[in-house]
Amino acid sequence: MLGFLHAAGLAGDGENPAAVALTGGVSSDIWKVELRSGPVCVKRALPRLRVAQLWEAPVGRNRYEWRWMQAAARISPGSAPRILAHDESGLFAMEFLDSARHPLWKDELRAGRADSGFARQVGACLARIHAATANDVGFERQFATDAGFHAIRLEPYLLATATAHPDVGAQLRALAQRTAATRVALVHGDVSPKNILVGPHGPVFLDAECAWYGDPAFDLAFCLNHLLLKCCWVPSAQARFLECFDALAAAYLAHHAPQGLEARAASLLPGLLLARVDGKSPVEYLTEETQKARVRRVARALLASPPARLAEVRTAWQES
Image (cartoon, rainbow, N blue to C red; front, side):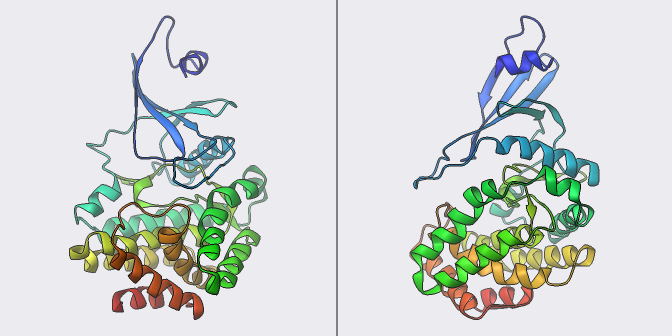
């Protein structure tokens, strides 16, 4: 890492800066490095993710992560950290954003501070990125990461869950196949509150390791999924989380709603719900069987009778 910083010109001659490992991720090593010029973040992808089940992924995904951040920042300035340097070994450096001014959205939601206005900003910003990259051959060539997306998203989420629930396995495999075959816009792949900072001027997206030119419905469903799951984590804030769900979905669809996108997101959402309790990457905060049972009950019913509108998923979840 030090060699990378020197080669990139970020660390000066003879500079041997202190580095502190940051926590929270399962797929990469990330450090805060105190340079003379100020702090930066350095990130390196891991070949094997830190989860209970065996989960391996190509480290070359770092290249696509910094490419996604650069593209997002051009399309919607401020929506991603500024990239400072990168190399082909799997390392890149980006600006360090202080949590005092950029709190993590997941932490805000955990405290029950569910701001539907911010959720609306997330939906609108995500839609702008998708709309600006839609049907763009240049982006399609830059982000031809089908194998990586399969390894990091489709296999551990939908296909692993299909094995755990064979009676709805055909539906889950069909969702994976449809998602893999839909290539229409630049996808982040991990739009989760743990990867979104509440910036002073709007959302800042992190951790685009799953970047892929594919189905934007995946990003929309992936983020809305977390707002539903948070209802089990902080039951007292359920009404506010559902308001965020409505605001994010409405803002997204107001900016970008090509034919079929909402139906794909709505039918994918129950598959992602089920994956977060019985796939390879279960959410860490659903620990009680009653919580998991609620997720399974709603998700399995919706997989059996696929919804065409996001509001149908929201209503089923609320009624549960």
